Image 1 (cartoon, rainbow, N blue to C red):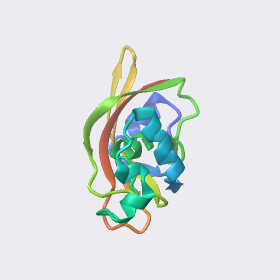
Image 2: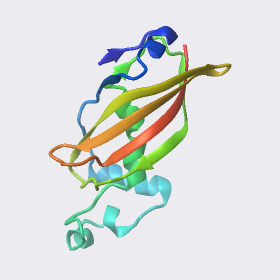
Image 3: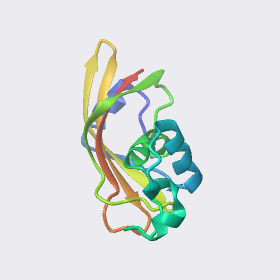
Length: 150
């Protein structure tokens, strides 16, 4: 786990892999709560009986649920005790190459691609690769953009 304790540390870490998160279990309860929050109740996510006969043999997490896990996964991959505020700014690229079956565990690796200082803080671009335990390809690859204020 990398410690980024200043803007200078952040800039010095560009091009480096900052670490991997802990494993995080994707439960049916979390998928159902996400479905409720977004209004996306497609059967492949929320109907275990019907999904058992579907293409994945069971329910799978929403792609956007997987993407939304990045902030919680980041907390165990790298830390900065001196960040006063951090906000999501967006994403440059997002792909979901493989499904996340409910009950599986995911983790993310974080690579710092770019840092730009600005009036509102430091704009940070990271390549985030989310993988599934025992999987052979990533379940999400995203280039995320955040703003950090030290």
